[in-house]
Image (tube, rainbow, N blue to C red):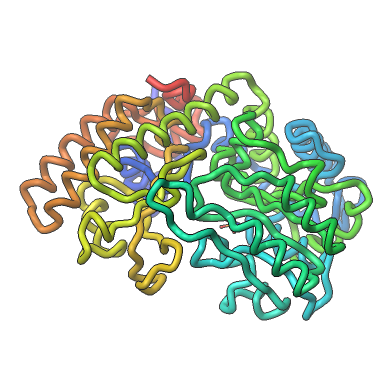
Length: 447
Ligand SMILES: *Cc1c(COP(=O)(O)O)cnc(C)c1O
């Protein structure tokens, strides 16, 4: 029995969705901010809740018919609070950037000073980049990482610098959190500095949220005044953002999200967030978080063995950041990304600290293990991936080498497909909303 395909009447979109599913099934997904959600999360995301307008919050909506939606959103909020041990949760931010902007709106006035990490040192656009609304609205001052050291002890967040700048600039808010940084971020010293200068402290856990939920990284909840995160990176939920905070900040945070910044919430995504929070509370997710970190360590060791210099000398999270310059002085992040893409290895170029090249070209690559660990890959596969990356990048212009790597990648992916559906000719409808919903392969226990 096959399920009726709801997209049968739109072959153009149906074909594109099938092609994307096929791409995810047959190439390596090493983008550090990506993951494979469960079929349950996909199902909730594709639900009829997308039809509902629900401006406001549970019990205080501007439209009728919201009793069920209220229950959905309350469930998501309760599960977020319970997962992170938080007093209050706002699950409405459409994305991580919105969550950050909402917190700035809640805590700051335009022109106020904020201390955050510089973009080219590992920070995020929404931490005050001049091209972002955040940088145009508030006065951001920036800290960075310590210089690179031959013994691998450098390129850590420079806490002395954080303290010095905080004492000099007296920011109203200090932000911790990174996009491209392979180390644990200890929230405690940030709290100390914030207290010393009378600043508020926001921890942006967009990347490590799943590692925190799974107990692999220290939790900033209860230490930072506000914690923002994305639900789609290591947390493995639908694409979106969330905020948890102390009860006394709840009103300001909620008002900043709606009506301050957004209109109607995406209740279908909020239902999927609720599903993901429950999944992340399972014992299997603790194993997953530990496996993600263990896999990254093996991947890092393998890449070092291939002759790449690792920014900060290694990893303590899901990311490995490569400095390509010692491997090949002429190889840019841009061309390395393209070479790997053609070989079926999907990752992204990234600036490294004090990168001499532009953000569009870069001298670095960022790899992550969150997605392929979900697909069930373990240390043996990480070692193989490191070798394939080295092989492909040593011969960037050799089509024969590329074809060999592509073939090995394909064989690897065939053994660890993220979704339990036929690799080709799979209709996404059967995966997300059909009665024969595919199950996702790995429980993330490695293998
Ligand atoms: C990914 C990320 C964000 C933004 O998330 P979006 O959902 O893409 O808006 C914010 N902060 C940090 C540190 C991130 O890594």
